[in-house]
Image: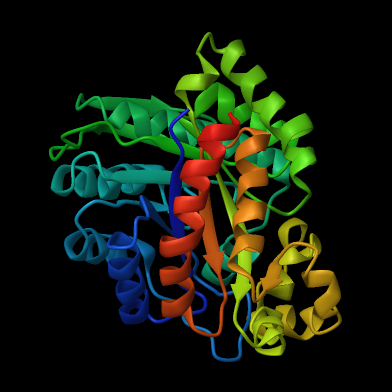
Length: 337
C-alpha cells in the first residue's frame, strides 16, 4: 500500500499568506498534499483568521510543484450551490490537472446560519450531500444537464471549462453512517482522529468498505485520509497552550445544533480543560510521539495521514515532520507491513 502525507491548511488559525509559506515549506519537505479548511466563520474568535479556501487553493497550487491541493472539507449543500462547486473545482482541475481534490461534508452551523440558512438535521444534510455530489458529477460530464432532485434543480446547465483529469471527491465521515456513504458515493474518505485508532479500524473503515462493496467498487482503490492533530515544541507548556483555541471543535454540540457565533463557541470552549483536549491531540517535545500516533493511523487502514499542527513554531514543526516523521513512517511502516 502506498502511503501519503498531507498538511492541514487551517484558515481559522493562519492568514492566507502564512498558509502559503507553510505549503511551500511542506512541498519541499516531502509532504504529498495540502487540505484547506473551508469555513465562513472560524472555530474561535480571538486571533482568528478566515480566508476563502477556493481562492487560496489556486495560489497554493501556483506556489507548489508536487502537492495535491484539496478542501477538508467543503459543504456543497446550503451556502454553496453544488453547481457552483462543480464549476469552481472544474476550473481548478483544468488549471492544475491531477492535483485537485474536493472534500465534501454535511457542514457546520457556524458556516451556514450567518448567511440566513436554516440548520437541518444530520440526516437531511446527508441526503442533500448525496444529491449534491450526484449533481456535481453530472455537470462534470460536460453535457447539458436538466436535474430535478428533491433539493436542487438545473435547467439545461452546462460547464464549458472542464477538468483535464478527474477530480476525486472525498466524503468527510466521523461515524459509521457517513463512512458507509463515503464508500458508496465517494472516491475517498476524509476523517479526523477524534477517537482512538481502534475505533477507526473496527468501526469507521469497515463501514467505508461496506459502502464501497455495496456499490460494487473495490475499497482498496479508494482513498482514505485522516487528520492527526499535534502540537510540537521543546517547551511543553507552550505546546499545550497553543491547542487551547481548538477546544470548540471537539464539542459535539457545535456540530449538532444551530450555534454559529465564534464568540459563543469560544466562550463555551473555555470550559474544556487542556487535559481533555490532549485526548485528541498529541502534545509533545518528541517527534517520535508524532510518528507513533501517525503509524497507528496507518495500521488502522488509512492510506494518508494529514498532519494538523497547532505548534507554537509552525515552520519548525513542518520541517521536523519532513525530516523525522515522514522518513520514519516510510521506512518502518513498510517494513512492519
